[in-house]
Length: 90
View 1 (cartoon, helix red, strand yellow):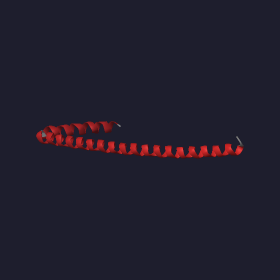
View 2 (spheres, rainbow, N blue to C red):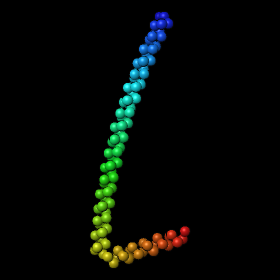
View 3 (cartoon, helix red, strand yellow):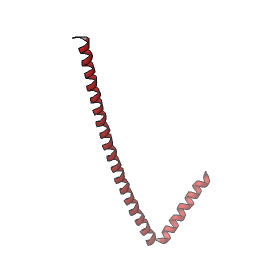
């Protein structure tokens, strides 16, 4: 083989390698975008579940307060006193 043929072959190999790397880069980018979109979808679903759970908890607390107003006031007072003492100690 002569040097020109070796150089030509090397240039062709490098061109194919560049094309393969570009293709691989696009594939990795596409996979990352898909996974990112999947992650966003999961976060939105989880946030919606948390919102629903918080809303249900709020309704239960409101019902409990309506059913036992005196107990609720006394509990709130007790919690307030406890927080006040903890803050006062600092």
